[in-house]
Image (cartoon, rainbow, N blue to C red):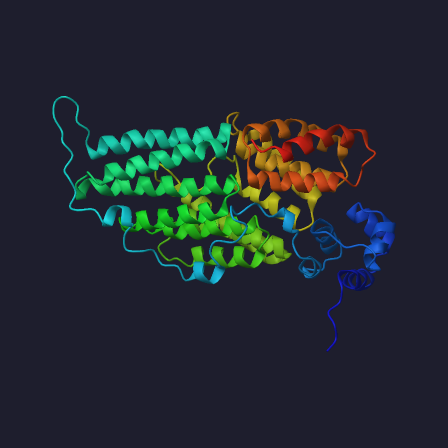
Length: 418
């Protein structure tokens, strides 16, 4: 058997095939010629960021990216250090007929109403609907670790009140409870607990299934795809996204968001053509959903001024095209609303990383200065992932005054979660 080629051997093969010298590759990737020579000769081990830049510079179509395993330190914590549900089990998942917390109850107890102000099911839904809006806004300004206890407490109260509702009052309340559970799952992921994120996402599916709704069930695969994406698992990200899009009853918005995750999965795998095709599909689906209108609480983030542009920039970075990613993000980030601190910080981290990858240290310093302040306020495991990548990238310029100025703040912020 012929042993598989190392990354260095593959790099030399693609470089020579493209007619690119080591010096030219150094210019294209912003790494030194000497460093790249050591990579080719096996004296240095490549990192995923370098593999992406070389792959794009040499048009290797993902071959170089697939040669390098993802960095274990890039993966957010899963709570207990393991993945909760393997991919094959997730893809076979079917929602249970009913959540035990409601299905096991005796017959509903009618809600008492009188002139002194007894609450109806509609009143309860309206009250918790307003609370849900506030919780989402709170998460943008103060971060997931502070939001998780609040959201889970309100969800338990809402479920207990649903038990007292008559059958014809339950549907709207169950759908809202499902949205609470889905949001709780998202916040647990942002807090670095992927196990709890999976559990709450599954609970959201069970609650929504009681009403006959299938959109949250389809969207659960989008949420799980996002978890796998932040674990740098391209194969699982794509598979879960495709499962969501294959759900016939899924709305255009859910299928559009799933196509975005699919694009990000293809970008991780270095498949540019498939990535761009998925991005085009997502933009068409999301535009159709926008024209058709939507429910009061749409699924997915609504805080990005142009989610299509943001995701496209995300993909361009992962495809080894940081200059294009930075140009797009520079244009879009100023459009964030002042209160959307967490959403803005997510893409600002990508912007700082893109500029650092290009060696644009002055602009990196300017962005990181306010980004780190935002991260302290809205601590997020997924944003930290990119900030860690930023710290590793800046380590290439240890003597630069701007890097020296940032290093203590980076160390402190990454050491002390908010």
